[in-house]
Image 1 (cartoon, rainbow, N blue to C red):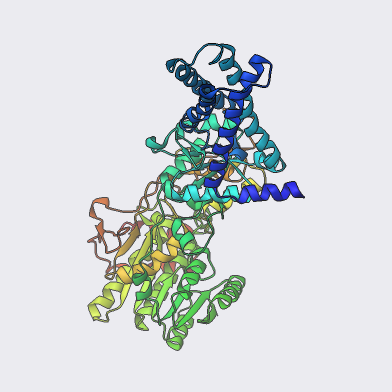
Image 2: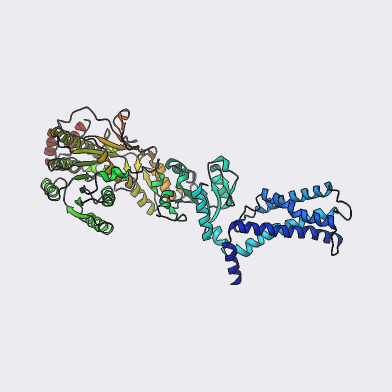
Length: 622
């Protein structure tokens, strides 16, 4: 018990005090080593003369700056690696050589000066005392936690402020051994920060192999989204768990403490950093307004509702055809907000119901998220896909225009650009329908805004590849990709929700707004990274004994190898938000649209999927 209290007292001492204590100890033991060298040489209790006493005192005075130069006082005893013995031996040897040179330069030689055996004896004693004392202290003070520490050895990516604070926090908890920092700053390489060596990125694999590293902790400020994705690719073949330190902004806001780590997630692997929202744009079209969200129970719709209730709307109408999802969402939102919530069960093709809801609740904003979006499923159910995605949008937009809704925002998809599948074609029709109703409102001078928000895949949304990969991993694989070179744009569901709201504030009516989404992500890379995030390894030709294989099954009907965000990339213009763009408005008129929609209604009523498919693609190019 007394030893444990002693350990605690030493551990709680400020680092500066520990260094002073170590320097003082070295001064005493080196003086003793110099004196005892004479004792051993003469085999008697030796009483030095004045010159010999001065030389003994000079020994630690010479050694101290040498030890400082060699970093002996930067090292932390509890984390002292075994190989540090060579550094200590070098420092002792160098200080002994200087001591001998000083002895001879001052002509203190002969029997009463420094016999030839004394420097050797002094060197042996100094090595034993300096090295032995440190490793003895390490064993005595820290051996109870040694095995636990070595079981969790980590590298911290980023030697900046966040990385240093994290290292200190981990040390104080005695849970993880920090073996080193990794940083791309060449000026830091080889330096010791908090007694921890800084290494370049190129040495990651060697450090993992040599030190037995089993964990990598990444500070978000040290890597961009693309760099983080490349790092994950580098670690694919290594059995290393990757975790991430929350952003400094979250730490200062009190959301986390500096030692609070989270597992790296899919959002961290996107090819760009998250796009910050503009608070004034978020508040502009939501605060104190009555909002209706269609498809509210879906992945995007539900996240949109979570974001809206935080912005103090007057009322939020939750509209969906799925009873269970609306029930669950209503319960969740009621627990986090005192906003008035109105759950409504119904279809967006039900015009009379929509008219009653809009008029009764005096809806001011409509966010239209309801749609069938699973590409292969819509491809197999052309008629129902067209009925819901096209006719439903036309009914909702027409009713909203007649009811005087101020802002109407359609959630579109990058698959609407030069569509190659039914789902994309229906989304393109929906964009044209919203543009048409926007033109009508503008011609009538109502001041209503009809706009579309187009973006790529949303991480984790229903019908996306990420839930599929998670399910396949849970079943032990394999993960299936349709083509090795297939790429997609991705964004987080939180960003999608914020973009949808901001679009209403930025829209000029009848336009299409897009998020600058960075680089497209290769789906095979995403699959392999998800295997790694699950703590497993990829089974391939390089690693035949891996856990889960990624197999290529071939492109499905209507699937593109690469998606596009714009019809005309050269015609994209900026908005007041640096990461939100406005697509060039196509000059082709949409006056033909009411007749085309009526024709589509007739084909749907006939349940003629081939004719519906043909018409969808004929008019989707407008």
